[in-house]
Length: 212
Image 1 (cartoon, rainbow, N blue to C red):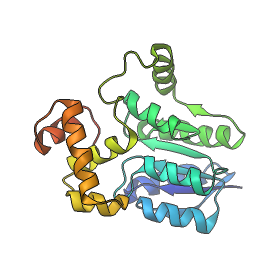
Image 2 (image 1 turned 120 degrees about the horizontal axis):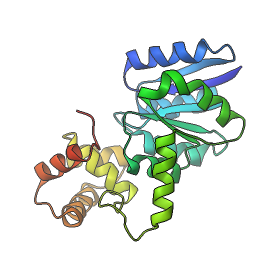
Image 3 (image 1 turned 90 degrees about the vertical axis):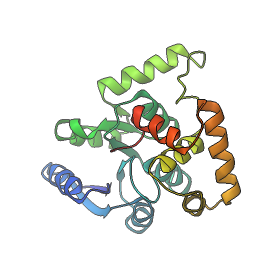
């Protein structure tokens, strides 16, 4: 049996994904996590064969969970499951070490196939994700979008600011000083040519970096 860790902050979504996985006949969900911290704890505790991780989770987002799992358990493959279809998320996930990327909309048809392919040692990308990644490679760095030009930490801070978190809350989440978070905030304002946190929130919503 393929042992799966399932991390998503919506219990209804987890229940649906669990049903899809366990109806496959050769997979079982050994642990569930409603946020990033629990996902990291459960991965260390249960040693699953694969982790299915949503990007948009509270506490620690999926991209950071992916990065930390790559550090603590490099052999654990991660499939990113997300609402986001935008190119920047595909690129970020693959750069961070994900072995696969599918959207929640395609999960009923593609989740089981994606898990099996990754377990067999291959990557799995939906057609749209593969096309977006190929476009990024062909373009190189010369035509990066504004969002793509942000570093991983800048993107994470932007998303948290857009969700209404304070500098202190963000600092505690990433174990950095409030001054460091403020430096990231000022850097974001400068890079994006914006004036204040309200502008950052609007930018994040317009670019579908946060879920409403």
